[in-house]
Length: 274
Image 1 (cartoon, rainbow, N blue to C red):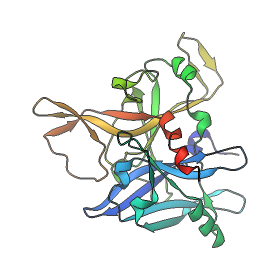
Image 2 (tube, rainbow, N blue to C red):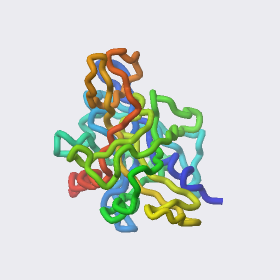
Image 3 (spheres, helix red, strand yellow):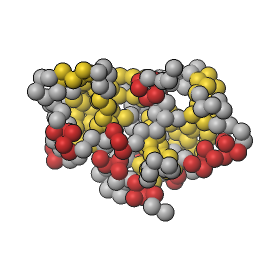
Image 4 (spheres, one colour):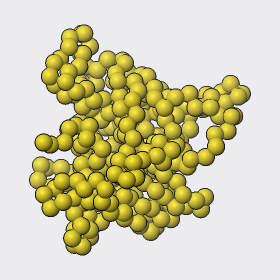
């Protein structure tokens, strides 16, 4: 029996461990296909710029695959890379906290050593069009996949699922930016997490009609920041941190996350034209 949709999604993310001057930090990346023509594609990992900022060394932990393309969950293949930050291609807009790293060289190197790696990339087919966003309601259930506080199933190399809801309508650009808000617990280490709408077995459309027997999946975007309440009564939007450290009482998370809309992921693709 094949993998379910949610089982496949457990292979769509990768834990990013960075070594910088401050020590070790963790974040979330996810696999994506650029220039996918159905036969070939450029495999990349997408995350936030601030996840890899200042990283001297980085580690990605892959799951090994059997010869028949079955994941070997307890058999891992860590890849450690030097000059880590320089390997990422950053979105040219300084205000867009996205970057991507090509991984084909590392996959090919592993393959040359007889190590086939298993991963299940996301692709453009689940990025909602403007019309599809219009068909969504203001309040939709969402899932977020990643490594909050660096937590993961290290034995089986698996991420953590979180659930929440949209806090602003996905069709609108929150505060004029290509962003939306979600209502979910957004902890350090969740930066770079993909946020999706996933309805299995059916869903209710805007008119209240229940669509039976269909799976609906949309990649809404990528978590990068969250509003925090200060004791001075101010609301400030700050990057979701990558280090697990004591939270100052001067800044209190209010369980909202800021999501970069998934259409901006495609803007990274042009950086891989060569």
